[in-house]
Amino acid sequence: MTTHRPTRRILLLGGAGLALAGCSGLPIGGPAPTLYTLSPKSTFPADLPTVSRQLGVDRPSSPAALATTRIAVARGPYTIDYYAGARWIDEAPDMVQRLLIESFENSKRIVGVGRESVTLRSDIVLQVELREFQAEYLEGAQVPTIRVRINVKLVRMPQRHIVAATTVERTRPAPDNRMTSIVATFDEVLGKVLREIVVWTLGNPAINA
Image 1 (tube, rainbow, N blue to C red):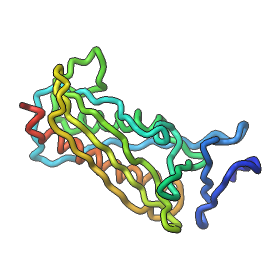
Image 2 (spheres, rainbow, N blue to C red):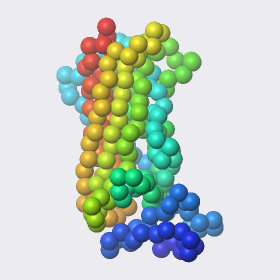
Image 3 (cartoon, one colour):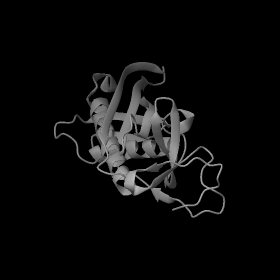
């Protein structure tokens, strides 16, 4: 277990002994954190429509507490901590953007999709807001529930008119308190959210209007 300075707050979670670090992060000179990544969605309904549009995916906006490589933990409705010794491979908004684009590509139902930029002439832009992306230990829970909530808006270009919007939220308890189980549950929950966003987007009448 990583040794922290006395001024740092540490919470041991059940028998697994996972440490939660405050915003100060890992101690200087401590061991390098283990990096984790998640996977894109690759299975979709057979009747998913084909879209002949260029789709640009914005980098998700998010609360400052989620705009980090640290893996967020909520122990109550008003606090955010982070797991010590574990980080995402990219900042959470960048990782979600990449996985969302790859999920659209894996659907094989859209002509073009990529990061929204001045070099991509998008017909439609998908604005993304990452609202929840954390493990929650609420009401004395000994194992976390993973919560992912993402809001998306379809914006028609070049007028920049919002033509449709939806919010997708999924939760699932992790099977135990091991970091590998927690990350696997993040992968499952985010995968369900990504799949629903892709299906909603490609099936929305506004995208081909």
